[in-house]
Image 1 (cartoon, rainbow over the protein chains, first blue to last red):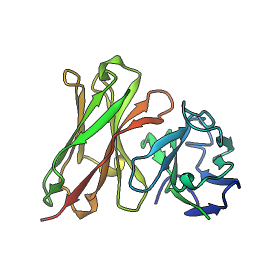
Image 2: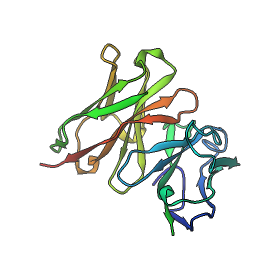
Image 3: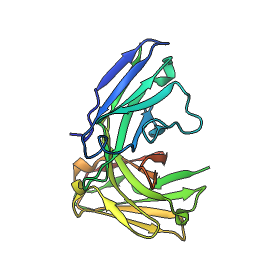
Amino acid sequence: QSALTQPPSVSGSPGQSVTIACTGTRNDIGSYSRVSWYQQPPGTAPKLIIYEVSNRPSGVPDRFSGSKSGSTASLTISGLQAEDEGDYFCSSFTSTTTDIVFGGGTKLTVL
Amino acid sequence: QVQLQESGPGLVKPSQTLSLTCTVSGVSISSGGSYWSWVRQHPGKGLEWIGYIYYSGITSYNPSFKSRVFISVDTSKNQFSLRLTSVTAADTAIYYCAKVSGYDRHFDYWGQGTLITVSS
């Protein structure tokens, strides 16, 4: 069981927007703005797409955005494209002995 | 550009020790500011943080691995390594090495991953 909770799957049609939630506790997301998101197309390594809740690394389209409210972080993908299909993982710093925690991952299907 | 590459045997026997090395290029491990980490992923499952090391040798491990894990660094070769002892079939997974931001712990660069199978 992962420390952060994500929905197993989400889907949307091309051009639509989808939001993936990542729920933690006061030990991680609730107390720190150190949330990151990763995209993992099938058969590839994860790729950083959001860090520090809402910052995008160079080269990541602005269709990807992040936010946080309380102990829940969210990733929104607008203007869905077929290439966005894959798994998405959230991660956070935690003040517990674990230090870093991941969500269980969400599979995005573009219909 | 920053690149990481895992290397090591793809097959390990039960009860033996899994050993992997990550070779880093494009940045010096000794430059500081980053942690150097191992993450694994069971086939079709989520990501699991194993631990990380700083260039000075300071480490942090996921308690789930108890005393089985050891991460070391060789700054002269710009490499860091993972040792996982007493492996079982449950340790069969894809193992990734990654560079981690020292502040907010985001993984900004990843290796391609290597599949390790534990089987006799």
